[in-house]
Amino acid sequence: MSAPRFAGVDWGTSSFRAWLFDDDGRVLNEVRAADGLLAVGERRFADVLETHLARLGADARTPAVMCGMVGSRTGWVEADYLDAPVALGEIGRLAIRVEDAARPVHILPGIAQRDAVEPDVMRGEETQLLGVVAEGYRTGLVCMPGTHSKWVRLDEGAVAGFSTFMTGELFALLRSRSILAKAVESDDAVDAAGDAFRGAVRRALDAPALLTGRLFSVRAGWLLHGRELGEGLAVLSGLLIGLELAGAAERGGSLDGCVLLADGAARALYTSALAVAGASGVRVMDADSCVRHGLVSAARTLFPKGDQRP
Image (cartoon, rainbow, N blue to C red; front, side, top):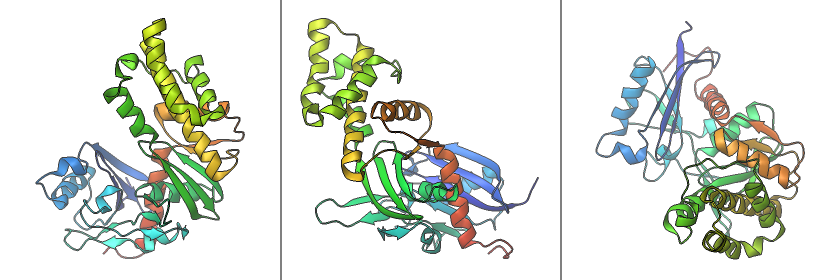
């Protein structure tokens, strides 16, 4: 087995993921846990990190580079936002050193768009984008589905601009805490290839201004026509994702040739929705792979190959 060189950590609000890498950036071990910021509580960030790095097999001198909400105002140490447009290659060089850590630990900064009317921020996604660039996609539009989906315009390896859409959060709130809840009370996975989902995407794309009325029709269809709960859930998903695609096209222009950075169910839903939108040449990348590549890229800037470990 190759000797460990550095650790990479993606530390979010609800989850903790870490990998141990060798000198060539190969994964030696990984750990995933529910130790996100919300779960740290009274425990010290340093203690949580050291526990998981020990599980990985990292010795006391193995440095770590981290991304995600651990660098937010409510995290371990705040890593200030870099202002867009910003070259992704600068991310590693401008990482923040955590002074009270037991080993060399750096946190990568997020990116801010300081428009007076429509400001925006990202934290964690910049590292995935660094991985996207490392995998050879340097210019174009990147779709990053999630609780707060990001659509990012890359220009020669730099983040030129981006927009956030609260699609995932709206879906969760409407599904569980709105008047629609009883009409979509289904545990079935949404069928990305089904007519209910794809038809809803189409309706949202064709007339985004009618979205709130069409959302209410989900409830009305359940009351008046006895529509199945799984169908209602698929329509809700399709309307919201279709609205997001309409907004992304309004902001970023053609969706042709974009990168879809997604895993699991989100990959299937967005691939289907982009096809409904007529987007051609969509390139799908694995989100997990890109965050690992991004962490490796940043670590190589912080800890150059051949240097003695700090």
